[in-house]
Image (cartoon, rainbow, N blue to C red; front, side, top):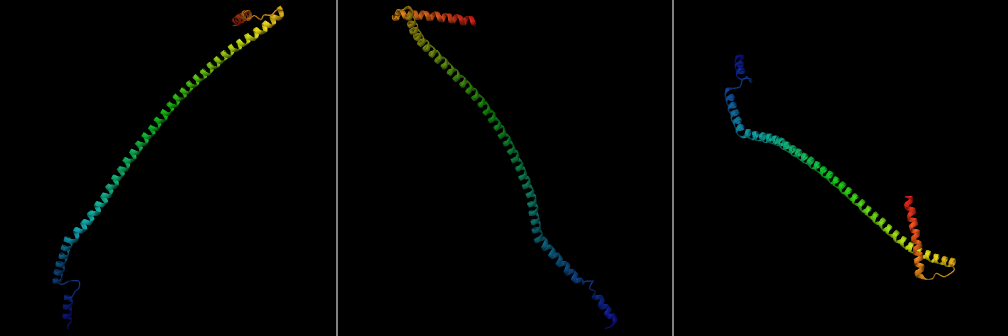
Length: 185
Protein backbone atom coordinates (compact mmCIF):
# COMPACT_ATOMS: atom_id res chain seq x y z
CA UNK A 1 0.00 0.00 0.00
CA UNK A 2 1.10 3.26 -0.91
CA UNK A 3 1.56 6.06 1.46
CA UNK A 4 -1.33 7.91 -0.07
CA UNK A 5 -3.70 5.06 0.54
CA UNK A 6 -2.43 4.77 4.06
CA UNK A 7 -2.99 8.44 4.59
CA UNK A 8 -6.54 8.23 3.22
CA UNK A 9 -7.27 5.20 5.41
CA UNK A 10 -5.87 7.01 8.41
CA UNK A 11 -8.21 9.91 7.75
CA UNK A 12 -11.17 7.55 7.70
CA UNK A 13 -10.14 5.79 10.87
CA UNK A 14 -9.62 8.86 13.06
CA UNK A 15 -10.84 7.85 16.53
CA UNK A 16 -11.64 11.41 17.41
CA UNK A 17 -14.14 11.71 14.61
CA UNK A 18 -16.88 9.08 14.99
CA UNK A 19 -18.81 7.75 12.08
CA UNK A 20 -22.15 9.43 11.36
CA UNK A 21 -24.23 6.32 11.62
CA UNK A 22 -22.77 5.61 15.06
CA UNK A 23 -23.53 9.18 16.18
CA UNK A 24 -27.15 8.86 15.01
CA UNK A 25 -27.60 5.44 16.67
CA UNK A 26 -25.94 6.78 19.87
CA UNK A 27 -28.19 9.83 19.93
CA UNK A 28 -31.26 7.70 19.27
CA UNK A 29 -30.33 5.31 22.11
CA UNK A 30 -29.58 8.26 24.39
CA UNK A 31 -33.02 9.77 23.83
CA UNK A 32 -34.73 6.39 24.30
CA UNK A 33 -32.84 5.75 27.58
CA UNK A 34 -33.41 9.36 28.67
CA UNK A 35 -37.13 9.05 27.89
CA UNK A 36 -37.42 5.75 29.76
CA UNK A 37 -35.54 7.16 32.74
CA UNK A 38 -37.70 10.31 32.67
CA UNK A 39 -40.91 8.25 32.55
CA UNK A 40 -39.97 5.55 35.10
CA UNK A 41 -37.10 6.65 37.33
CA UNK A 42 -37.67 10.41 37.62
CA UNK A 43 -41.16 10.10 39.24
CA UNK A 44 -39.75 7.61 41.77
CA UNK A 45 -36.88 9.97 42.58
CA UNK A 46 -39.27 12.93 42.89
CA UNK A 47 -41.55 10.83 45.12
CA UNK A 48 -38.63 9.91 47.43
CA UNK A 49 -37.48 13.54 47.52
CA UNK A 50 -41.03 14.72 48.30
CA UNK A 51 -41.31 12.13 51.09
CA UNK A 52 -38.01 13.33 52.53
CA UNK A 53 -39.11 16.96 52.32
CA UNK A 54 -42.44 16.08 54.02
CA UNK A 55 -40.61 14.09 56.69
CA UNK A 56 -38.25 16.97 57.40
CA UNK A 57 -40.99 19.63 57.36
CA UNK A 58 -43.34 17.33 59.29
CA UNK A 59 -40.60 16.68 61.83
CA UNK A 60 -40.07 20.39 62.22
CA UNK A 61 -43.83 20.94 62.57
CA UNK A 62 -44.06 18.11 65.07
CA UNK A 63 -41.12 19.59 66.98
CA UNK A 64 -42.79 23.02 66.98
CA UNK A 65 -46.07 21.42 68.10
CA UNK A 66 -44.29 19.45 70.82
CA UNK A 67 -42.48 22.59 71.94
CA UNK A 68 -45.77 24.53 72.04
CA UNK A 69 -47.39 21.70 74.04
CA UNK A 70 -44.42 21.62 76.40
CA UNK A 71 -44.67 25.40 76.84
CA UNK A 72 -48.42 25.11 77.51
CA UNK A 73 -47.81 22.33 80.05
CA UNK A 74 -45.09 24.43 81.69
CA UNK A 75 -47.49 27.37 81.98
CA UNK A 76 -50.20 25.06 83.35
CA UNK A 77 -47.70 23.59 85.84
CA UNK A 78 -46.66 27.08 86.93
CA UNK A 79 -50.30 28.11 87.32
CA UNK A 80 -51.06 24.97 89.35
CA UNK A 81 -47.95 25.56 91.46
CA UNK A 82 -48.98 29.17 92.12
CA UNK A 83 -52.49 27.99 92.97
CA UNK A 84 -51.08 25.32 95.31
CA UNK A 85 -48.88 27.92 97.02
CA UNK A 86 -51.89 30.22 97.39
CA UNK A 87 -53.95 27.35 98.82
CA UNK A 88 -51.14 26.44 101.22
CA UNK A 89 -50.93 30.06 102.39
CA UNK A 90 -54.72 30.17 102.84
CA UNK A 91 -54.68 26.91 104.82
CA UNK A 92 -51.79 28.18 106.96
CA UNK A 93 -53.62 31.43 107.66
CA UNK A 94 -56.81 29.51 108.49
CA UNK A 95 -54.83 27.28 110.86
CA UNK A 96 -53.32 30.36 112.53
CA UNK A 97 -56.78 31.86 112.96
CA UNK A 98 -58.12 28.61 114.39
CA UNK A 99 -55.10 28.40 116.69
CA UNK A 100 -55.67 31.95 117.93
CA UNK A 101 -59.37 31.20 118.51
CA UNK A 102 -58.46 27.97 120.29
CA UNK A 103 -55.91 29.76 122.47
CA UNK A 104 -58.48 32.44 123.34
CA UNK A 105 -61.05 29.77 124.18
CA UNK A 106 -58.53 27.90 126.31
CA UNK A 107 -57.61 31.12 128.13
CA UNK A 108 -61.29 31.84 128.78
CA UNK A 109 -61.81 28.28 129.99
CA UNK A 110 -58.72 28.56 132.20
CA UNK A 111 -60.00 31.87 133.56
CA UNK A 112 -63.41 30.31 134.27
CA UNK A 113 -61.80 27.33 135.96
CA UNK A 114 -59.52 29.60 138.00
CA UNK A 115 -62.49 31.70 139.06
CA UNK A 116 -64.46 28.56 139.92
CA UNK A 117 -61.54 27.22 141.95
CA UNK A 118 -61.08 30.56 143.69
CA UNK A 119 -64.84 30.77 144.40
CA UNK A 120 -64.84 27.19 145.69
CA UNK A 121 -61.81 28.06 147.83
CA UNK A 122 -63.55 31.14 149.21
CA UNK A 123 -66.68 29.11 149.88
CA UNK A 124 -64.60 26.45 151.59
CA UNK A 125 -62.79 29.12 153.61
CA UNK A 126 -66.11 30.70 154.58
CA UNK A 127 -67.51 27.30 155.55
CA UNK A 128 -64.34 26.49 157.50
CA UNK A 129 -64.46 29.94 159.09
CA UNK A 130 -68.08 29.44 160.14
CA UNK A 131 -67.27 25.98 161.44
CA UNK A 132 -64.20 27.27 163.27
CA UNK A 133 -66.21 30.21 164.62
CA UNK A 134 -68.91 27.87 165.87
CA UNK A 135 -66.33 25.56 167.40
CA UNK A 136 -64.49 28.51 168.92
CA UNK A 137 -67.75 29.93 170.26
CA UNK A 138 -68.51 26.64 171.87
CA UNK A 139 -65.00 26.20 173.23
CA UNK A 140 -64.77 29.83 174.35
CA UNK A 141 -68.24 29.54 175.90
CA UNK A 142 -67.36 26.43 177.85
CA UNK A 143 -64.01 27.90 178.91
CA UNK A 144 -65.65 31.19 179.84
CA UNK A 145 -68.37 29.43 181.85
CA UNK A 146 -65.77 27.31 183.61
CA UNK A 147 -63.70 30.41 184.31
CA UNK A 148 -66.77 32.35 185.44
CA UNK A 149 -67.76 29.42 187.66
CA UNK A 150 -64.38 29.52 189.29
CA UNK A 151 -64.47 33.28 189.70
CA UNK A 152 -68.05 33.45 190.92
CA UNK A 153 -67.71 30.34 192.88
CA UNK A 154 -71.00 28.91 191.81
CA UNK A 155 -71.88 26.64 188.96
CA UNK A 156 -73.20 28.14 185.78
CA UNK A 157 -74.53 24.91 184.46
CA UNK A 158 -77.79 26.33 183.18
CA UNK A 159 -77.30 25.96 179.46
CA UNK A 160 -79.78 28.66 178.35
CA UNK A 161 -78.25 31.24 180.63
CA UNK A 162 -74.78 30.14 179.64
CA UNK A 163 -75.57 30.48 175.91
CA UNK A 164 -77.07 33.92 176.38
CA UNK A 165 -74.07 35.20 178.33
CA UNK A 166 -71.62 33.74 175.86
CA UNK A 167 -73.47 35.09 172.82
CA UNK A 168 -73.65 38.56 174.30
CA UNK A 169 -69.98 38.49 175.16
CA UNK A 170 -68.93 37.33 171.72
CA UNK A 171 -71.20 39.85 169.98
CA UNK A 172 -69.55 42.62 171.98
CA UNK A 173 -66.12 41.32 170.98
CA UNK A 174 -67.09 41.15 167.29
CA UNK A 175 -68.52 44.68 167.29
CA UNK A 176 -65.32 46.01 168.93
CA UNK A 177 -63.19 44.14 166.35
CA UNK A 178 -65.31 45.49 163.46
CA UNK A 179 -65.02 49.04 164.86
CA UNK A 180 -61.25 48.64 165.12
CA UNK A 181 -61.03 47.42 161.50
CA UNK A 182 -63.24 50.28 160.26
CA UNK A 183 -61.04 52.83 162.05
CA UNK A 184 -57.82 51.35 160.60
CA UNK A 185 -59.06 51.48 156.99
